[in-house]
Image 1: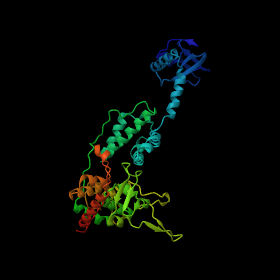
Image 2 (image 1 turned 30 degrees about the vertical axis):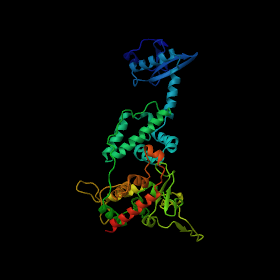
Image 3 (image 1 turned 45 degrees about the horizontal axis):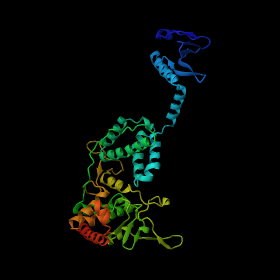
Image 4 (image 1 turned 180 degrees about the vertical axis):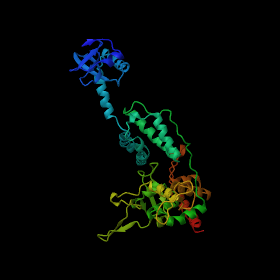
Length: 419
């Protein structure tokens, strides 16, 4: 091998020969020339008596300046007892096996959310809808702060600021989980703030809105099960997800006991069932077609996928409400119609301003307060966790007071819808 000092002109003028050959500067920094004319930068060195050739890249794609920088860095590693080729191979292996965002989502759900969060299914659904379609195939370690900002801005721009905040909350937790488990060295969420204010909802329906809603639900585009469940949220003042998951095993006489495993706050909760509640619940038993025997119905609002033996998904109610508040308008042929701005025309099949199923729970509580019931009783109806010293010393279940409040609320509600 001829020893020389590389220059751009010299390297450029190296011509291919019958056999491959190399030129070097005498310190391990070389270039190989193939009969085909392909030129490749190499670093030739020895580690533990073993000769190694490290590929620094093809010329001219890798310039002399860049190749020399790679060579100097590799030489420093060798002087410190590190084999740069082994380091590179390990880096390639680590990169190949680095988790994609989809894989990180799966690991976060399995190893954290399912163990510590009752709402893990909601987290998983959010990740599958909002995050995986955008980042799923990318390596989690490649997600940068700018990527986070762009994702959140896109959600805000489509008119869902609250969802943007929720995505921030869940993805930040997921990436922190990855750092804690040494999956990632850093999180891209440092310094990221919510793009929209977290506004506490205060929507409570008026008597006129309740009457219109109750009437319009009869012709709304939703199943009978969702129709009844939505009304039952209003009648019982319970959380929509807890209502949808109601099971005959939880009903004993006039009382519905929501088990701690289903309650949002992890506390078992007893709810008094009024006559109107029982009308909406319907039959508690069914007749077996094969034997003719009666058996408990099971889930009051069963999933349409009956083979799964599950209740209707908790997100079905808010989705049904949103769709009916903005139902697509079509012509006689079923073709979509558009408004003056060129956007799909929609109609409000529920007849009232935007609301969520949870607002019905707030409506019931607000009305009970207006009727003179004390906060302690309303909190007992809603299953709100007691705070401070009262949490330690007040163990009263308020069953009698809850019954009185729900019966009074039923009478008030009857007057509203029949007015």
